[in-house]
Length: 137
Image (cartoon, rainbow, N blue to C red):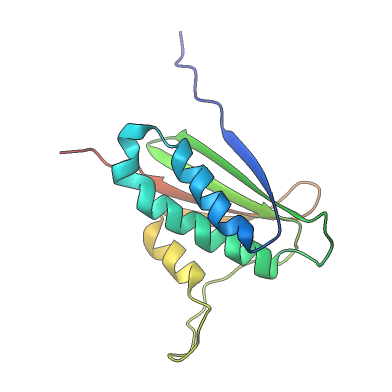
């Protein structure tokens, strides 16, 4: 009999800066306790960066805009998808040395074992990033 996978965890947050902290907390708290010391900090940082980017670049000004997150384990990784209604394609850029922002995807690129941008079936964009499960000890 095949191993039954865990059901992905799904959240929706308003496209509001206050949602960054709420999303980071929700995602890290959903990790199994044994994985929090190994993945918690990196997953929290990925969540913060991707949700911040989605709010800044992926939504309009309407109140009904939502950021969606899905977290699931598969193939030796924990995968996080952050989706927004925007049509843009996030790209890594090298910001000026004195720039106060623009480094989010650089962090994602350094932290994630793999990441990509995918269009959503109806409308919108998803950024998907995976963190490798590390063996303890």
